[in-house]
Every structure is written in structure tokens, then in C-alpha cells.
Image (tube, rainbow, N blue to C red; front, side):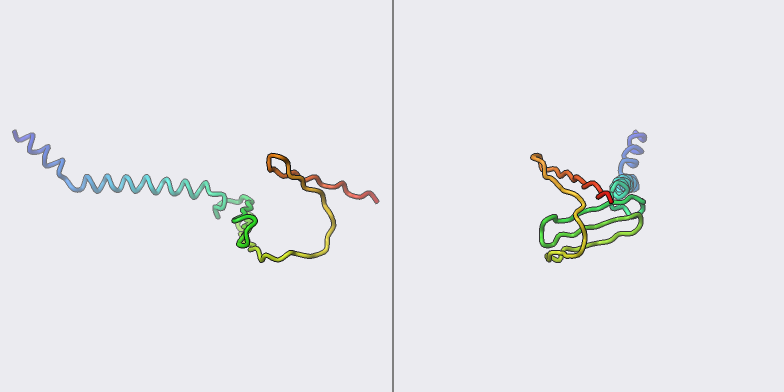
Length: 108
């Protein structure tokens, strides 16, 4: 009979439930760390990444990560101008993908 009383006392121990909660939080923290590590905009990687947010909309933004440097470019809605020359032609295929065909350099 005394063995049953000991089992009941061990099952009512509040420390056991606290240990279980700590285990759950450790699993959640590990999952969050993996999510941050797999993010392409992770500041701890030396990758070069370009992200375009809200493409084609007035609040469009382009984020360029070059190693440890991150630049943000926001759309002003105005047409740009400047000097330059034609570098090639872009074609939109039936499936929606884009193909860029560079022009050959002019021979002197």
C-alpha cells in the first residue's frame, strides 16, 4: 500500500510540468533559429540577394543585399531618364517567363 502512495506523490510533482514546458520552448527556439538561418536576407551570410516587394505597384521596393551591405530602393512612381545605349532585347514567352538576348558588341 505504501508503494501506491509514493507513485501518487511523484505524479503530483509540479516541477515535472515545468520541465516539460522548458522542453517545448527549446524546440520552438530551435525551429525559429533554423527559420532565420534559411532566410535569404540573413545578415550573417555573404550571399548576394535581390528581393522585389510589391512589384508593379506604387509602393514597390527593391532590396539588394551584397555581402554584408543592404540597400533599399523605393519606387517614386516617376519615369527615369539618363544617357545610355541599347544593351539587348527582352522577350516575354507564352509561359510568362522573360528571356534577355544581349546584342553583340559593335566591331570597330
